[in-house]
Length: 431
Image (cartoon, rainbow, N blue to C red):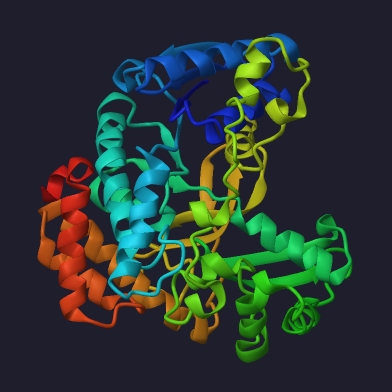
């Protein structure tokens, strides 16, 4: 088996996937090759050395290779793991602050709202060429995508290329943890089904795994009573007003709502206004560099900690033919997995994995009140994909004006021109 990890230089994603793969007992004795790919040679060398150190500590027999050119790495790949970005935080800050300066009260500017348009377009410029290389060099490979904005990126992948792409996100596990906390029950005792759109989905089933008792009404009642946590006010209001248990992170929910900023405010969580500024700069410290220098123990939890993502479990279940349901996979709704959402939308549903691959599960309908919030987003996704395909600024403007926080054509046109100019080096399609 050959696994290609594109974006290996990421200290969070890359480290986590490397740790997962090299600690997977299911890979032992199975002639697994891990190929690390990153366009920065220095960063790639660092992560390759990290992988070799973890391999030495764990005794893994996975073969490790690296390549700065993905075209050298992709031939023969069975699985491709993808998480890539360029100048992530600097550009994300523009995504957030520039629309705010034009009066558009969005939240985060990552996966929804006006800022997410530019995040998506930059990601398209990176991932679509990767997908075309996969089509040419390893068309049988399964692509497991982590690049955000997940739903927008996967929509472009599935409509502009023929890759076998699935999107994965750990977000559902926080909803499962919240249910476990509210009900005071271990998560493995609960039978949970969630569905919707990435970062905006609701729990459709929560039952006692042993008895079948329906616990969802009680969970919604308890969620509606959560008034003491300022980070869960939107979550609480949805439970109280709509009788739904929706993903309990207000900043993610709020990205898709006209009133999200009412609960999130105007502060950017990753900006200087959210961090203390030291009077004297401390020497830079990086736990990976410290680990490579021998200044951290070989079993350091920060280095070996599981990623919390489901890529390696999915790969192992396919390789070993284990029949198991994973709680959240992002796929095209082509077979009506969510009956009351468009067939060309990217939805998040449970997926059954076995030796034949991954099959999304049909879950029926999501509550209509929640579906009504999702549908405009799916139209925006379609417009962005077509705008990228054709280079049309007009379609970008249409997508902006469908966003629930955009309340001015004039300001939207000015903001669009401003952002396309600011980020022209990263958006050659619209240069």
